[in-house]
Image (cartoon, rainbow, N blue to C red; front, side, top):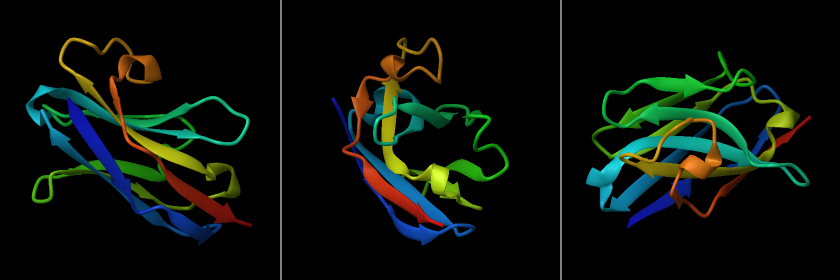
Length: 126
């Protein structure tokens, strides 16, 4: 099993920045991909960004390209999401997810991830 704990959410004004972190624990050697998804009220869970935990390749949703950066902090062993130029439409609960070896078909498909964090709220005021 893999456990994921997110941190770093909060309230920020439009145009501001926020960094989310996700700390994996447990059978972390089994992780192949990690990603961030978000879900706004009344909407489906949406892909934000993902990283191949082995080779560092990154993937982004078009809506966040150029504004968000996904990265791995090897010293802290965390998956980070640096979010810049935030807009009210970025308001959502942000979830960290992990996929073990062999389960990934499409990094943007939440069903390909087997482990999820509890989520952290990001609210962007206009």
